[in-house]
Length: 310
Image (cartoon, rainbow, N blue to C red; front, side, top):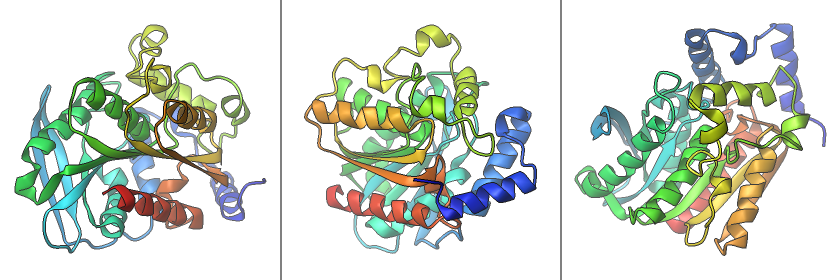
């Protein structure tokens, strides 16, 4: 279908304002512009019961964590939510509005992880920070009001990639038992080059050049590391025994096909999967709930899914 009218209007504004693609900017400017645009489109952040900032001793120093708690009694289940930004942009603040809405709608603690960014810290720094956070909180979360027997992981874009890989790592390392995974337009295959990757070239939106720009920052030896299942979870040899998954994709997204291929790979391995494509939507829409009705609807779908497992 054509671009949703709300997305088409967004495109008109960007073209009229001559908004430059992030990949044409300096890293410092791209990081600032990315956060500003997400905060502008994310809607008014919802109040929650409490927000606590802390850190845990990560593999290479302290890693920031932020715990969102809704107004609720008793130990609560936990969702780890990893922000997007191609492992290159983003902070805990990037996903602040999402974390608040999910905490309230699910009735769970949401833990944001301030993982190290590339290119200053390339693969596997972000991954090890995030996996370490899950392990640490599983061991220590009870003191923060968590029910650590009910843990889920989730994220959008690069955050979805991290959630998918962490699910594989938790299985393979006999780590924390995860109830489910929320994968919002995740990167799953470094080598993806056809279909949605080839079609999405519009410089007004996240496009195939954006994807290449992010990979170039994240990977030090792209041809070799890109085939590593910790980078491209679609390329893992075994997907059995993974937690149930909700995979959300967008029609006008270069990552659409690899997200849907990952859902199919999980289903073929016997993992319960729900796949939800939002027609007329673009990459990033999940974080644009203030501007796009489907962004709010997708967050509601994610919350409903998480409630079933948490």
